Image 1 (cartoon, helix red, strand yellow):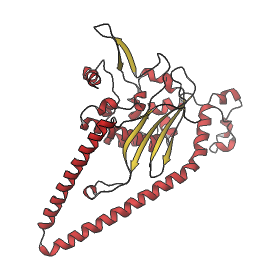
Image 2 (cartoon, rainbow, N blue to C red):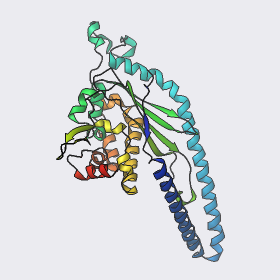
Image 3 (cartoon, rainbow, N blue to C red):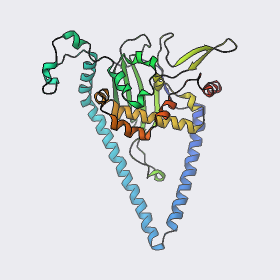
Image 4 (cartoon, helix red, strand yellow):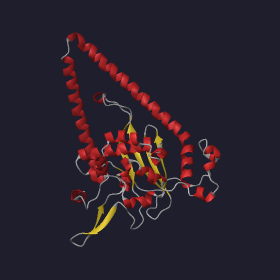
Length: 333
């Protein structure tokens, strides 16, 4: 089912602010690159004369090797785009089994399980209730983002999939497909991640292939009175105010509030969001059944080594009633 038309908003700042930010970032990059080259020259100059030219040549050789690695990563990404067509059939089969629209056949089951299929067609029609809610709840990284009020909506989630895009607009989309529900009009909620593979001389050591540099969210078309991400309250002057509150569905919202805070906080948010999006694509979607069965303990522990649970809560904790500073920032915005 194609996504319904809805407003898509980037996490990048408004145009005027974006231009100023780009200029500042460009200047900082130039200064950083200049400092890097000066330090590099000093380091080479500190070597014995007989070694200086050799080390400079080795440096250039390393740049050539890294560029070849970059080309390798680009080819791998192209292969991933090519192969995603092969993933569609098993992913669609999983969706149909979960929703109960697929009638199991003996060949679908592991050896020895055929006799456990049962003859009750009505039982098969129910599929696997709360499959994705259970998957998310068994994923510690996502579990901390889910509020009790979110569960009723996540029970209507029938499929989660990723679609990879090739260059020049490299990246991937996360697509969350829902049954018709009383909360919002969208059938599919989409979040996109934009990636690049551009090694630079001053960041050779950190280069490890494609990196995510921006995310594009979707404005959910909530039905009247059903928005789980906001709450209307009366202030002391009797005026109505809309406050942001905690919800899993804040994951889809553009974080303009963070863009209006200091760049360091914004960068921390974006980095955390990138980690979560990449984890959903690489681990949760292809290993959903393992998460459902609780077979993911080691994987979760490894991921949490680099992503603290409290930090995840902080990224999507938008409750202005609990945090007056958040409300102040929104007023300033």
